Structure formats: structure tokens, C-alpha cells
Amino acid sequence: MTRPNIIFILIDDLGWRDLSCYGSQFYETPNLDRLAASGMRFTDAYAACPVCSPTRASIMTGKYPATVGITDWIDWANDIHPARGRLVDVPYLKNLPRTEHTLAAALGAGGYRTWHVGKWHLGGPQHLPADFGFDVNVGGCHWGSPGRQGYFSPWGIPALQDADVSAGTYLTDYLTSRAIELVQQVDTRPFFLNLWYYTVHTPIQAKVEKIAKYEAKAKALGLDNVQTFAEGDFFPTEHKKDKRILRRLVQSDAVYAAMIESLDENVGRLLDALEKSGQAQNTVIFFTSDNGGLATAEDSPTCNSPLAEGKGWMYEGGTREPLLVCWPGMIEAGSACTQPITSPDFYPTILEIADLAPMPEQ
Image (cartoon, rainbow, N blue to C red; front, top):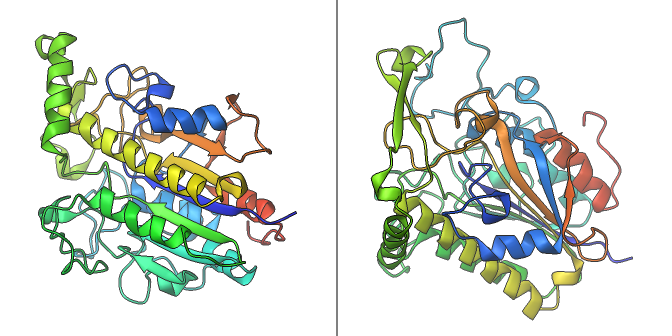
């Protein structure tokens, strides 16, 4: 049997209920619904942490964040993390240790071509994708978001050469185009594509025509006349101790909905490229998020109800994620799995899919 290609799509801050196939009545995700209909939808998939860097480290190493030592999102600019709690902080590393034998390194040693496209946020110089087994790195650096430049080029992201990119190019579109260029390369070896989009992390920005569509939809559904936020207690963290929790009560943010539609369209572009190149039947696709949707701060764009809270919280809204897995001929189309899984499970699972021996520490 030919070993399959493997694509791991990781979205930033996408909530459990942010897809149509997970119950959203406002966001539209026909291509992701297509992926779900072609494979398995997991109802109880959990991120290893309610913020990004620890979950990403867990996926890459097959270990829990505390074992790796990355226990909070990496703040590259400061030695003391701004998001301090009221208790003594756990140990906190600012880089993924070079001693870690990552999933990419294991697959590369096993004969796979390995590509990273998108957000990394696991350290700075000497701790970038190329230092952990990736043959190609497009856009992966110490940045945790597109930053002040936002999603429309020029981005200013250190690992992206955007001088020749047309001004105003949407980042999600560009990363997908680069990913498609990679998967269309002709080679006898299988590939591992680590497609970690920056979207839907703040800043919440989308294409004007899509925003207008969802503004009209919100109005048609009467969502512009309902209470959007409810004030709660003070935040239980030192850096926000004087601010109250503002819980978003409804999915109605037109810009966020437009971001999700662009994400969905780009996943559709990738699926179509695989079909056109004849690789779809021999490609395993994972689609998930690094933590819950942003739902409990001022201007939060989404609502995770019926799950409690969201990004940054250890409640269900902060850790339960959408997870879709498609493997034609191996996973029953349109199936669902209620078995709980979490981030460290991906590493040994993917090695087994690639017909490689498990790593002792995983």
C-alpha cells in the first residue's frame, strides 16, 4: 500500500461551534461541511491548552505542555509573561527545546517531504520550523498574529517575502496558494503539509464584500436588535484584575463571519487542488483549532454557547475544538466519533498512518 500524504490544518482561535457542521446558524462553511461529510467529525476533541503556543508544542511533540515546558502563549518581547495569574506561575519556556524530536522530524526521517505554511509561534531564531525537521517554511516565525499590519499585504511577517505580492492580498488566500504550489509538486515521496493558518486570530479583518453579506444576514435574522454581551465578574488574572468579563451571547459579528467564510473557501481551494492533481484519494486531512473561540473580552467576535467561556479559560469553551479527519477508503464518510481525544494524540496517530514506529516518549 502506498503511504498517504498527510495534511494537518490548524486554525487559530476557532471555536467549537464556529462551523455549520458543529451547529452554527450564522457562519457558513460549505467546504468544511464537505470535508466532514467525506470523513469523521469528532464531538469531543480537546486542545491541550486554552491558548496557542502550548497546544502547538503538544501537537509537534506528542507531549503535554507541562512536559515540554511551554505552558502559556509565547511573549517573545518580555521575560515576564504579561498574563500572570494570582498563584505562583508554572515554569515557562519561550522556545520549543531543540532536543524535542518533532512530528516533522520523525516523518522526514521516515521518507516524507515536510512543509510548514503559516503561523508557528514556538520560538524565535534557532527555534523555527527549519530547526525542527521542516524542509520548507512559509510564514512561520515568533509572531503569534499578523500584528499591526493585519491580514492585507504588506504584512511585515519576518518569514514571508511579500515584496512581490500585490498590495491588499489577503493573507489566508496567499498561504493557501503557497500550500497548493507545494502539493502540486511531482515527486514519488509522500508529503506532510503543516498548514497552520493565522486566521481567525485578531485583528478581526475580512474582505469588504463578505462583511456586507453578513451585515445583511445579521439584520435579516434580527441579530442586530438582540443583546450581544453580558457583563460578569472581574477577571481572575493579574493583568486584567480591574476589568470585568464581557461574555458574548450570540454569533453575529459580520467581520468574523466573513473571515470564516474566507477560511472555508481556501480549504475548498486546497481540496479542489488535491482532486485535480489526483492526490485526494491518497491524502489524510486533519482539521482542528489550537484553542477555543475568543468570547469573553471586550469586542470578542464569537460565542461558544452552550460551552462555557472561551479562549484562555480551562472551561469547555476554551479547550473543546472542532476536529475533522478525512481519509478516503479508510474512514467511513459522514461518520462521527464521541471518543475524547486531545492534542498529544495526533503524533502517534500520524506515525501509525505513515507506517512508522512509535517514538518511546510519545
